[in-house]
Image (cartoon, rainbow, N blue to C red; front, side):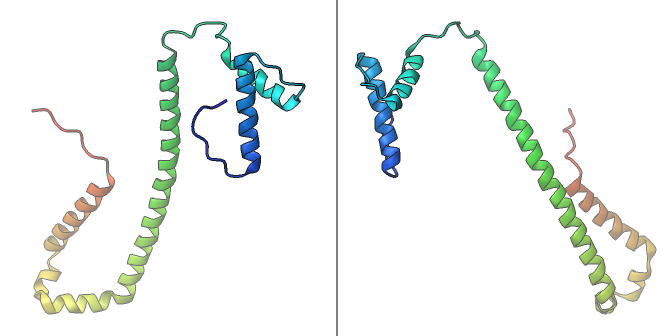
Length: 153
């Protein structure tokens, strides 16, 4: 039934292929099937494929099918992205818990190391700590919030 080059994987597939080709040839040339039920079934399919359609397809049929395929692809992609997004939030939560655990376990060591590098009065200045916190928070939110729309000039 198919005229593409064929590479059989095993004997059963090759036999089916040959039966389809014999049925196609018998239908095309009007040959007798000699009572072979297997060949007759394939010949009925070949006959049906050779018949013209009972009705014409609408002019926008291809457009409608393409739109339907596009909508289905978009739904599948959205479902795939929901899973990835949920797993990303789970991973982010695990990493945040790990960060809090590390700060609890080793925070005093980090504080001593930072005191050695920075003067003590810089660490006790609340405005400086607030500035660092705001910069860190803005960078984190920039990664997770959707991009802003460009403003028109």
